[in-house]
Image (cartoon, rainbow, N blue to C red; front, side, top):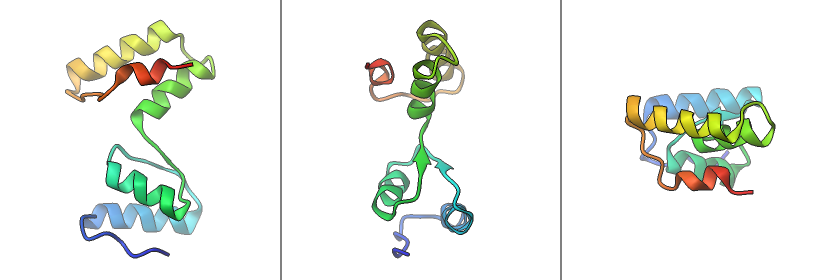
Length: 89
């Protein structure tokens, strides 16, 4: 196992330790955590990835996912750096 970055708080360390022990994939919007997961081989998803998968796997239409993006930005005050990346073929 790679050493935990000092920037990880106790909750992030615990989440990663449990996920690694159980072979789970984690959900995170933290860039540092995602990068660490990529380096160590632990699976991770982020919100844009989940939204992208919804329309790519035809679980929702592009229009429905666009509406979700708008709703998330408006109600949850989450800012997507590049929301159009979600819809790239």
